[in-house]
Image 1: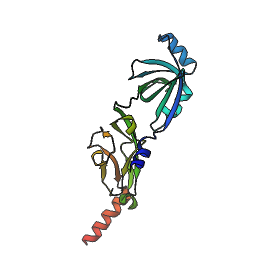
Image 2: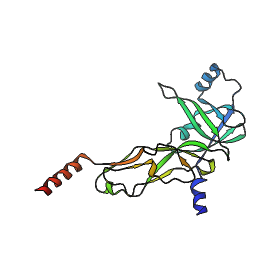
Image 3: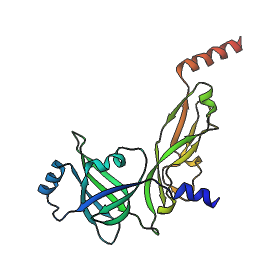
Length: 206
């Protein structure tokens, strides 16, 4: 059992971001950095905030992925364990403008959104229903060592027209903060299947 928990919680995917300290935080330098394909960022949660910049290409897998990564933030040789907390894009061209990171400390819980992963075979889907994912991530609170790669949602009992709500999900060594009444997944009944069911009901009454 200990080994299962170790595998589930410790090995969150890690991504390295190599950056450089910022001495000047003015708007002119910020604009110049972006023009040179760098992204400004800040790391907070530690003894002091660290302002830095890093090549935009290094953020591609972190920002444009549905997965959650622990970040090895390498600022001029000093390594910080962190998670991405916020990201800003240009409102018109979608260029990445700024990234905020939270430094991880073993004894301090963090709040973060974790992807959900559907497991099992839904009886409703096997009868012709369509599985609709309502929530792709759930917000959790946990110590860094207990942050999972994903949260499993078992759909083995999900019937036609039914939903699984957050409150029904069995968690691990973390607290789920998302509204327990919010639906995570639903099996909808396609129009053609509804028509067939109505025809069968009519036939049964004759």
